[in-house]
Length: 363
Image 1: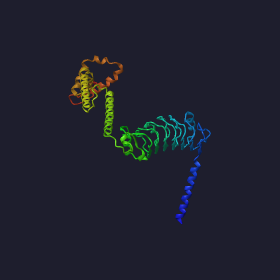
Image 2: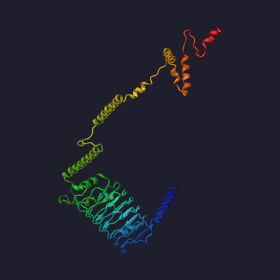
Image 3: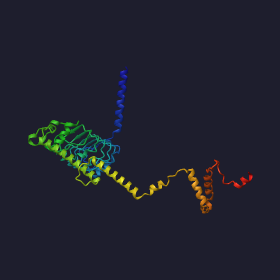
Image 4: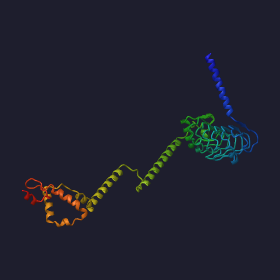
């Protein structure tokens, strides 16, 4: 009973989710209307737009109209008159997940044609006249999982930078299985991408590799050696450019040899010698600084130095008269401090302010 109730609840939830999804989807089907331009009177909330089997060229006016339908998740432009995809043709379609442009006459795809399609998951470019593709064209397609290039005129194709790609369709192209296709083969064999219809995705040239799948065709040994040589050349050029830039930054005028650790030691020795020489030069040519230090070599006066100083004052009393009035108080204090430490022969301290005659009269 509980299981039955749970199943009923689950079924009702699925129905509600489906109804909500159908409510958010706004579909418009304008197939086989002989439209030469994308109509402007469509609701801005449209999510699925089918304009297949018309005469649309996807020119500048069509691109301007498409920018108004930013809620689009699916766009179908099959069997129209589109000959080129220009830069920013779908720049405002941030929510687009499926783009189908099969059955046109596209021969040119500019590098910025898919800028803005960050959410695109499926891209169909089949049955066109594409001769070559720049792998950087697919760089903006960060979430692309399905890429269909079937039925074009592509003979060489470098591995695209599509990290989430799961399914790739390349059949119906005149593949030239020479050394230029070896990179694509290595990528197909090492990545997690599934090559759809691998058995019929075969080489058209050279004749001895016809009917071989491009994923398993036995390339000549010289192709592998060329790949290794090319990689070594690229690595060497990168290394040389880095060494040259480093030499230029430090104004190194030698033959651009790699710098070792000995130059750092040499610079340290030279700096030490220069600093030592500078200090010696200052000490010899500028002796004033250590004379100043020596002038501060003070010591405490001894008793005999005090007596000598006192005798000098008594012998030259005129020197005291030369002292200004502003410094008289300081001089008196210093004089008193000096005589306060004078010891008489009998061991008593002599007071210069007591009159000796008065003492004798009292006795």
